[in-house]
Image 1 (cartoon, one colour):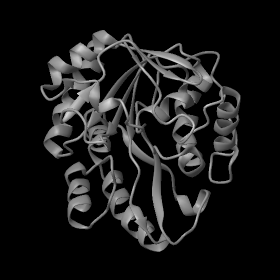
Image 2 (cartoon, one colour):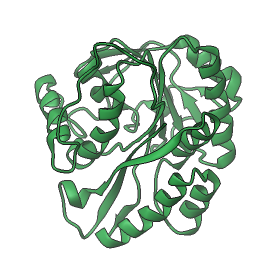
Image 3 (cartoon, rainbow, N blue to C red):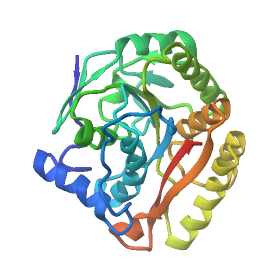
Image 4 (cartoon, rainbow, N blue to C red):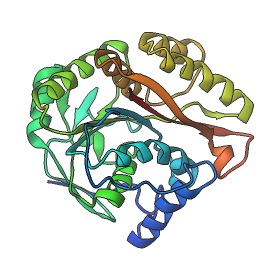
Length: 284
């Protein structure tokens, strides 16, 4: 079972070398971290287990995403990356995991860890095995080339898209992932929560709306984040994936660190109508 790329050639380059060049551009961009991280020769215990990453076209959000990947890469190659994203397409069930096989990008194929998938279905109580939700969804796909640039295809993924974004769903998901992390302490497992921030307001309005959400993330107030999104018209698309990382950070006593907040107006576009992007880590 192979999942073919849906947004190669649109969200990122379809030519492998051009794609690598774009990833390097993201790290070296003025909005990015300014340099490309090095994989450590001697791997220590990972401090940052949970990250927030954006998922727009690389020319827009790549420099912001690079901040989270800088920290991830600097702590070495993970064994498994659980990637949670929102369901933009509406296909599939409320919470959908891709069951097995490989995901293809221009940089190669990455294997899905079937055993972890089945554990997640068992423990979380809300995850369905469902390929349809993933076929055209970009929020997970755009993360994989960043990982492949550094680690080739020598890691495994668990791809999850969330259509029903409520605190209750986030709690079920977080509890399932917590049990997996507890069961597999011998594995280096990282969780990526994929989300963009406010969409299509003017630059100043988006910064103000984003800050309301960021304040709740810093407080690890996941129910408060949900209320901000619902009540303040903050059109953040992946708030359930972010809530999952916030809940897990509380369970593991990890602190939130905002790495970079910017908009499409800061990277590659007009400031009349922008999308916000956030990179954050949860560590010590």
